[in-house]
Length: 115
Image 1 (cartoon, rainbow, N blue to C red):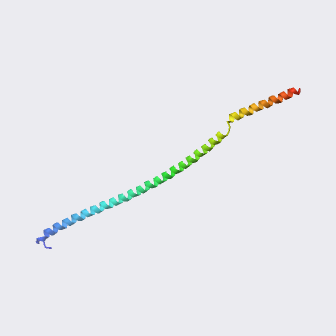
Image 2 (cartoon, helix red, strand yellow; image 1 turned 30 degrees about the vertical axis):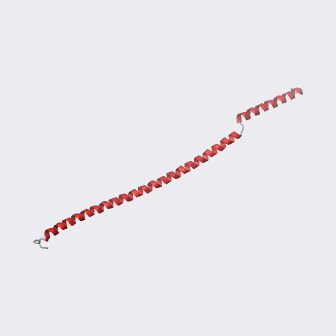
Image 3 (cartoon, rainbow, N blue to C red; image 1 turned 135 degrees about the vertical axis):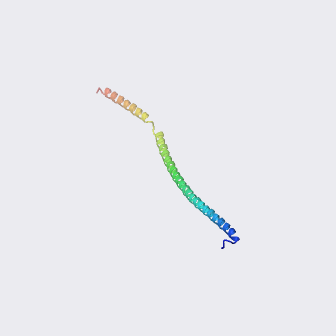
């Protein structure tokens, strides 16, 4: 190119515009790389959240299963208590029977003249 050429000014302007376009393309590529990186990190976070939710679901299921077992055991024990007579009533009955036997025994001994 010659400095006296008419097209030289146009070519220099086109070269400047091409340089500006290249700068813009570089900026856009940089921005795209940043967005891709953010997207990957966001996806990783989402997967991590889903893994945490799965762990929570397993824990809740385990707790629920343990609660059902505990409630079942409590229910079984309550049923056993309901089927069994009152312990206090049993002790009173044993005491009354013992007293009656002792009275009969002492009356028999008095009747025989032992006492």
